[in-house]
Image 1: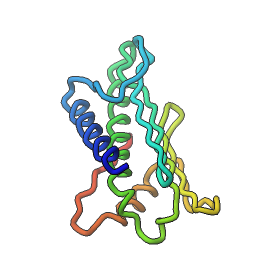
Image 2: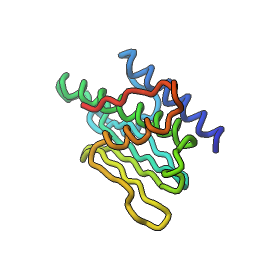
Image 3: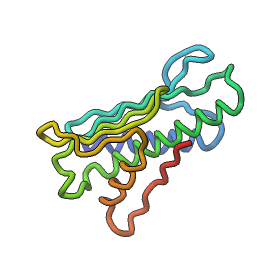
Image 4: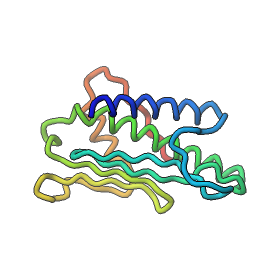
Length: 149
């Protein structure tokens, strides 16, 4: 699993570079046509589930909408990087917690559920999740900024 995690982290970093270069995202793009392309990233393991499906490269959308789409995709990539990086570093109070994170046209959200099915924390934005994840990063470790429009 670690090898796959490292490969995914490398691919996500490359995708972020593509997006930030302004030349267009090539990795993790699905769909077809002028308005149905999406950024798609999924991850599933016992302690972590990620499901991101966001509009991307909608050719007929106005420039402002395209910028918003790119900003949302960039934030999703950063969140995936943060999640994959910190999953193995979880604090003791989070060791037995399954984290699910999603983003799509309907919005974003997350939930953390313990081994008995009790919701530890959930939200319809990522601010609480980011705070919790940053708390498990080692001191001096640089975290990624999660910017959501």
